[in-house]
Image (cartoon, rainbow, N blue to C red; front, side, top):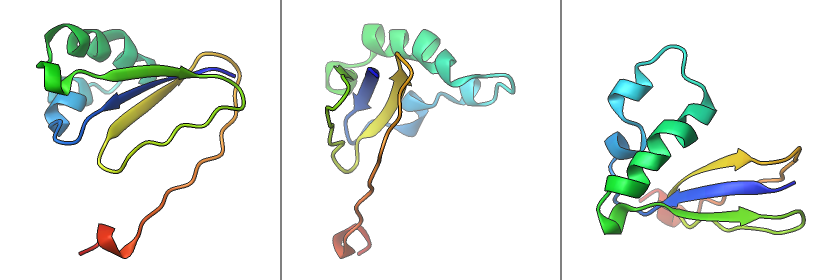
Length: 92
């Protein structure tokens, strides 16, 4: 199925991606990030921290570069196969 991907560039502070007030909420759901945090980032984040968005369709692949924050919203029933790569350069 289709997936909505949101990527935030390296250097984006954790407090921007995961605002403390939102993280402290006990009843938050993953969808809440897309409903409340993402619209604020689109409107008010500095240009160099604005999220990039794309939709992948069945059979497509996406590469998330190292250091990029990302989150995914399944738009349809879907399944995924993921692979993480860590080389010795990731652990100096």
